[in-house]
Amino acid sequence: MIEETKSSDWFAEVREKEKALFSEINLLLRALDRAFNPENLPVSEQNYGARNFFPELSAVRDVVLRVLGILEVIIPESKKNAFWFQKFAEQKFLSDRKRDLLRESLNKQDKPEKSLFLLYDSFINLKVIINDLLRSNTVSYSGYKNFGDILGREIRENRVFDPFRKGVDQEFDSINNPRIKDVVKSLKDRGY
Image (cartoon, rainbow, N blue to C red; front, side):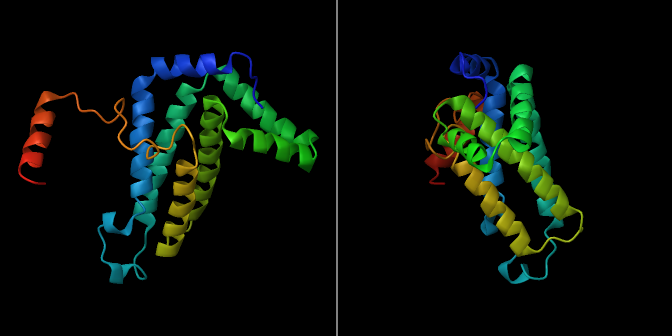
């Protein structure tokens, strides 16, 4: 796939250097997954059929674009260039069988950077789909929900970036602000 020499080194370096961005990706991926849970929508179940889910899908698009923006910052320029060149070469010069083998190699996610590129590739594709869906200015509940199912699957099948894989992640799920900690503790003490 992408140049594999010292591949884990650059990923480890960027993960350490850009901790805040990795934390934001974690949060945004959780939010994207939860945005499609009907209980999290400000709408009653009986209104699903009649409601236009354009505003909700527009908000999802904005988060997808933010995730892509972060990935653009996280992935070194030389790695992005190699990725795009490889995508071009795959389509232009490789047989279906060789393309399948490359895709299979990426999908194995046997290295963290492969998970990163898989997420990047998925979100590029999802951006195109969501923009096309929003062109009509009308989004049915089934269109909204089906897009969410695909998006959720992409998130949860990612070995490194699935925010639900670890449960509570001490690196990203800790609260450092003492005032917020006190509020959370007081809620817990009250039985919430």
